[in-house]
Amino acid sequence: MLVFEGYCDAACSGNPGPGAAAAILVARRDDCIVKEKEIVSAVTPLTTNQREELKGAILILEALARPTTICITSDSRYLVDGMTSWLAGWSRKGWVNAQGKAVANQDLWRQLMQLAAKHQVSWRWIKGHSGHPHNERCDRLAVTAVQAFKKQRGSAS
Image (cartoon, rainbow, N blue to C red):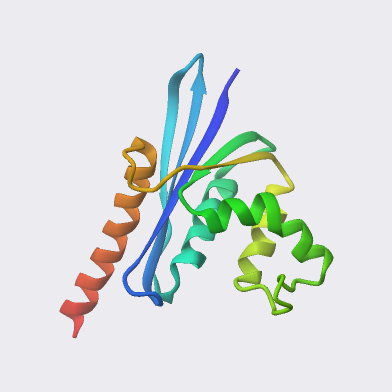
């Protein structure tokens, strides 16, 4: 039986600034990796790190061809806490947070909620930059995309 795992991270140069998300989708059988797929978003010229963290999870869920049981691992408390603790309340209360203000990044939260509903998703937080190989790879992929964007923009000026 295949077991699916997703890993995601984001990078932003400035906050706001140009940013990208990256994800790795892993299929395992008997503790052996059968297939890995790296996914990197297009760079958004003016975004925030939080928006890109949400986009990383969206990349994973959009890559699933059919309903799947998956554990998504991220170093973003914003993403993991949002999906496990805050989202149901926001939705129930008309998309306002505990301070009575409109939930930030509501468009992406709604998209993420809709995509996650098609699957059995568990969410796991890990400390960033702590040596987790898939998290470190996602970070490098996102950082590389942003650096390439900045270099291309710099040479186009």
